[in-house]
Image 1: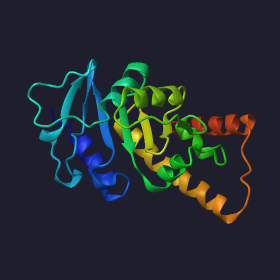
Image 2: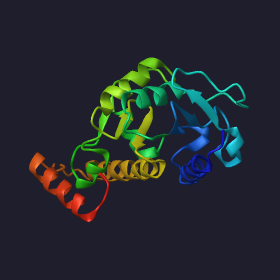
Image 3: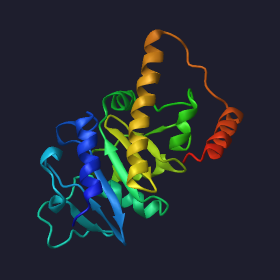
Length: 210
């Protein structure tokens, strides 16, 4: 299955240190299934021919040259639960992953959490590659577009692959800012619901997706 956008996105995230050592995975919805990055293949060497098509029920395309990412269940569960989402990016970006290891999310200390739909929650812990992890992720996403996976990493979704990639970078940026603030000893002053609603209205006026 070919999709040059997935290859380009994976290599960009890898080069940025967001998906180190073959970690993480990317998919894009196609028809009643999705196309996903393969398991255990370095992104720098990956080509379109290495991508794997997976049906909604988990059936892998018979002509696939590789196994799908071990987290294919997570992607399948998100697409099943969120018909509004067209792409999923799962990273192990350093600072957001560090937060996930404290099993804490990103509160509304900055209005840019609106890109994720609001504060970024941390999903309950479950073993990597399992259906339990997939379902915990879906539950924590709810009306959001990004979530931390406890002791694991980050999931960012979007109506398009470009939007999901942008959000993955923004979650890492927010995580870094939040950790820096905590490290300084200062106490974050959180935005309230009214603050967020007013910021969301401004975003809409700018034509910026939230």
